[in-house]
Image (cartoon, rainbow, N blue to C red; front, top):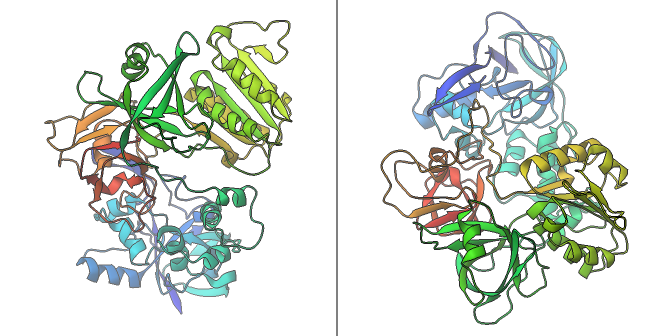
Length: 586
């Protein structure tokens, strides 16, 4: 018979960590007497980051005394007190390889249902004093698990734990944890996992994406997933940078020029996917080479590449491209890459852009027009005025080739002419988008300034589009994901403080920073943080893949071997360092 040994609670507090402040509820301590367990919490308990912990599906975290004993031996620790793993219930019994998702248990007056394994998170290692603990919990199949409260009631140490119902499919906590975080997944288990209603929605979505990629199931699948699974994963078609020749340069507007690129040996360039981008490396004469990324504005089958660049007032690279580049010049280009690509399927497509953000969606429109695609297509673009409306005639002609196309143009500083019923003065609004009549099952592709995409994305969600159907692209640094870190004022990316490194050059392409590596930083992630470059991470130990980043060029080594390697052409920056000069899409 399993037994509840300790009920551990603790309210969130601010903890100093690596020069930052973390708001966390990971500090738990045993409670005296009985405690009331409610739908979202135990009385006296709380979570600091509700995006990753807490809520109805993660109300109570369970860890086993047998795992305590295991880690005492593995790590040589004799200072482990109940609650140090951040758990609410320390139990005798209920091992992770026997407890199944969907199992229900009665403890004291309350009844619970197992919903998911523990989320891998750096804070458990911070609390425990072992930074690699998040990785170790997964690698050793001892994550612990969360409970949903079915019936509220009081519990206390010494209560017996009684199984009241077995979950369907009988997949254990350890099985489910391995399916998400470890390689060599069993496709049959993925399908079975999706048949467990008790599994929390976040894990269900992750398994749907994995199932779509592997196509293991025989049923039709979820909307769009079968089509997504049939899309080939494109790896970089050449490593690093290679020289391409500028074939011609065309002025599109007073501030935008298109640069056409051919191979230096006159062979056709490999086909790109509609929406992808190129990275260009230039020696501008001002220190280290500069790297920038620009969307392809040409059709995937064009045989050449076309990028279209806006001349920014203080843009080092854009100024060089507009004033110093000439036909016949050779430039260093990294092969097409990026996941902002036109998906397959037969559903409606909405292409929305502003300003120079038109480039990747224009390539998508070219692909649709070349195929005379029968899908309904909405083309929505915002420009300052006619003079600054890039590709107006080209897009209009492409839309005329589609059987079911709808064109909506907005000029923020000019009124429409009498023969322009598709033009409106102003900007798109929630009401105007709703009036266009596109259905809520459409796939929307957005590119433009961040504020524009945030506003339009909100309008689309209000219109009924699911978040996974709203695809966005931007070339500034991506929004940070730093769970639990107390926000501070944004700082422009800069060179790292302290003595200049002597190692290979590291270029953060999105942020425009190039700096030599120094072993004073434990990882590429730590170097990026020292430069105040927005970063994305959660476990910091190579488990969760939140930090996965495109490696544009160069080679890295892993200081902590990931439990599962990322796709070719990408790197986990949380546990890697450079082996050569590298360029990161960060």
